[in-house]
Image 1: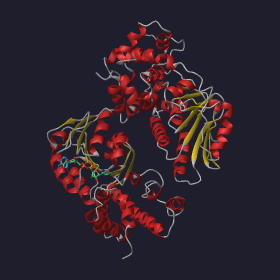
Image 2: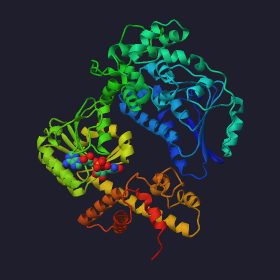
Image 3: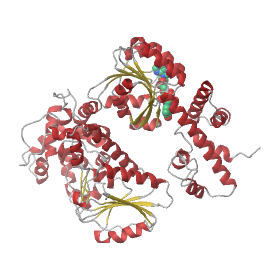
Image 4: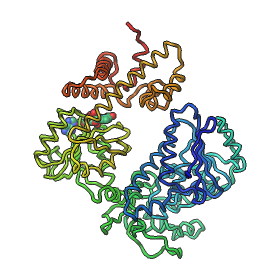
Length: 633
Ligand code: NAD
């Protein structure tokens, strides 16, 4: 039997955790089921809102199933942990950005992964038994599942206190700290859920039982001010119940160690603002926890066994990473370690809208990144070189992110002679298949590995590290760069030999251009036939005309999930970039003698739109206003 019940009840999507014997701890399978349901409900007109609750009186969800992660980790399956967190964080993000209301009802323990499931919902309800906390620090991890987002927004220094001590909040405090919105007595929850299932979102709001945070806030602000290095001494010098309670918490002990060893790591600040660092830290440590990678909680409760190195600064090979603090330096080290076992020397050529954030993410994960761009500045953490060749010298991987194939060929001529034999040239630009193959041949002739690895996901995906890479090249080169794809993106598909990545990219974008035009002209036709746009969306998004263009990126303002159409068609994905990709597809079709009439017509339409009809600088979905104003003639 499944550990999570997923169903539609009247007008609601319903998710009920049903693993009460394990305090509803989340397994990877549960997370996947929940995320798949949410994905499906985005475009489902029968689902107006989503309700998430859990069986049993003791816990909404006590966190991720660490036993499952630990078991797989000690069995050597470290990829399991990384996959688990990847899907879990994707689910957390989907909940936070969900286009329909989500209501969560959190009784009993709601901890760690439970916070990620319940506390990013739009309407968060607590009851008498609610006990909410982020206890990750107590086991040597950085708060994750977007908990840092919540901690950073708690009033004053409360987020630092909660993060370091793992303190539990009752219902009143959870509302005070911004982890919940409303108190509703738990006896009323069945009626409330029934009303929600009927689509009634008029939520009651009772006075919550008084918490302790309003009284403690001044003291917390004083005790937890400044850097981590300053907090332990202040706690030790303070004789109050709050200070004593904080000193007893194992996390505070860890923080004290981190502070003493790392000087001023700015870890408290980062605790609240560095979810990526958190992910790096936990991904590295947890699967190895049972193998001695983490200091264990002393069963006798005595955690004062003398200072230990900062947790995240430990490396599997022993020795602490030099100079870094808990997340600022240490999570970096962890990030580098988890993804391939070693820090790499990377050159990054082309630091524009896409390349800049991609290079920054590699540096943040702990790699040594040297960058070069003719115009754009090097992002934080990336050392600027004087030329592309200088950046490439001695690098194990050179990543390029350049405007087009001609520039790629020119840059390749500069850097290939400077690269060390055995290094890999990985081009992530979108270029023509011929240029990709020519550059790969040149690199391979010089004893280098070569990959063409164009991306989808846009500037937002580059910044968030959620790009998809479509990769062509040898298995060996792919294996070398895969750990870097994992940092910069959420998925990398090895499509085949040289040029296969670019081939996949242009075929995908040819489909996208064609379906966007088809979607826009169908909306314009529907308008003229007097059909309401929302009704059109409701039908098509669940019928055989559905597509990514309709369901996920609807070109009609105010219809479907939020898209550039709701923002005056500000790109998103600019029409001229779509034109570039369509031209590449037609050039490839020409070279390969493939018949692509729809792609050809799409290229012509986007060309007219961009060059003669004011489409340049607008999102590619602005085809809809173009069609609206036109007749058949
Ligand atoms: P961009 O124009 O912002 O960045 C390109 C950078 O390359 C610029 O900073 C430029 O100064 C630099 N450059 C040009 N010639 C150079 C040279 N000889 N040496 C060093 N640097 C040089 O463009 P972008 O949006 O970052 O796109 C880069 C690539 O990614 C393109 O191929 C694009 O098609 C592809 N892409 C972009 C997106 C997107 O949404 N922007 C999405 C997917 C793919």
